[in-house]
Image 1 (cartoon, rainbow, N blue to C red):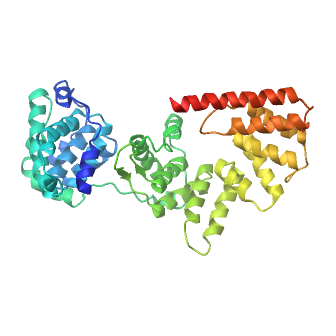
Image 2: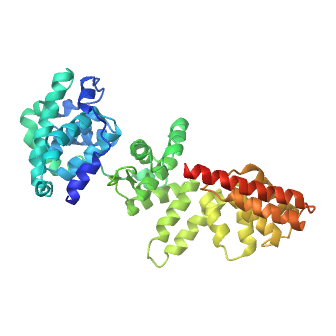
Length: 419
């Protein structure tokens, strides 16, 4: 099977059975059709609206783009749009796939599967059949075959020429000059904070990118950071094979937005801008990166503090940054590292009692996990302290109980992992 054949098959893997029956109960889709653009002969406006709708997973927009891709013979595009449609749980694409698999794919020879031209004809046939199924079972369904009339060829050319595909808007002159203004509602910001870093929620990331871009253009610092972050990391589906890129990474555009957000003192933007500078080969790239990291430390950014706590050449400076990290962004691992500093006097005055208290805190509050060794590390360290009277009174009995409990916890974890 060719790479394309494999891509087509895998893009629709996981199709639910009886998708054709599901189409019979298809509810009317409340989504824009943008016909007013066609009435004004504004093809560019129509295509732009379609691509924007597709970016927010509007079902109607995706259906039209899928139709145009298949009619144009742009099979690779059709596969990518098909993948987006799975995210919406649209019975249209599931019906299409069931029909294609039943009437075409299962009957194709290996030679036909390796010939993209064969797919073009067969995809068009099944697309037409899918439209017939939907017209019969959903009175509100509007078939693209009947919708466009005389604009059909013009729309196909517009699709081939990528008319309307979204590009990153240029920042306004005010934003370029650093005139910032907070205009994102707080509840919207909170929604972004929970999802924009989660690569397993690619459809949410696209939605956040679409929401944040207009605010970024208006000069909102946090929105500029969000746009820059997503452009830096890109957006791609995580659970599909092959993965589909929804937003191509663009380091240059990302840095433009991130530097503006950093200039407006968004803490997280300092680290992201520094990362992009670190990847450059310019003579001053490392100095630029450090400038942002140091500003991030002042603003209390977690990643910048962590970097300085690990990379600073001076022990006193490392201890200072690690202390601030524990204070502002506490974690079990950072507490254990700080305990080691107190135990050995690394960058600070030796204080075994503080070391003991930190380790005991981690042991008390951590739990068994295959993804975090804090429980095991703190148990072994605490037992060592108790046996040797480091920061505490010698207590062999408790030390023995801690190690016995650790063995029991490890047995339970192995049992869970083996289920």
